Amino acid sequence: MEDGALCFLIKTPAGNIFHNGGSHYTNLFYKLGLENTIDVALLQFGENPVGVTDKMTSYDAYRVAEALRTKILIPMHYDWANMQGDPYELEWIVKHNAPWMKTVIMQSGTKFEYPKDTNVERVKYLNYVDRWHPKLSWEYGEEKKIF
Image 1: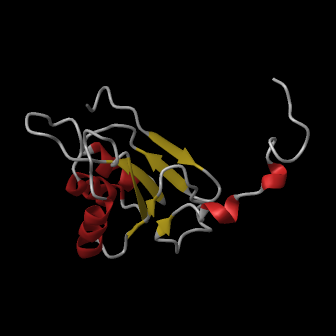
Image 2: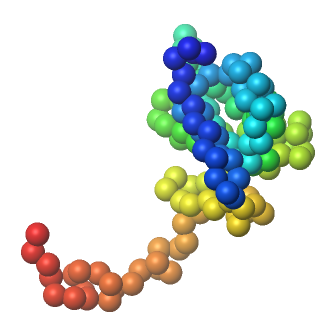
């Protein structure tokens, strides 16, 4: 995995964002954390069925975040059908082992802005009624557009 894994470190004026792609744990994460400030780490994890070891577990994801010395851990890809992971288990592991690190659990498709959302713990969609704007819909607003 060390030779073939693809990870991203995105350096921005607001802070550095790390995305581990689908990488397993490696000691190179520790080196990366020593050489860079990682503000937010997006880490995939899940559970492996018997006979499969291609996914990081929740504890592995915590170990990566700790090695990176990240301030904020955002778990991802834990809700796939064949590898359901529990983000609340990961959050518990982080709280009990690295209280200086924050876990932000997001609903798929939502947005997190760093550093503005630093104090947010959960990111969910608003109630659909609050988002419904019939006047903006092509069915109810402007004339129907033919594509």
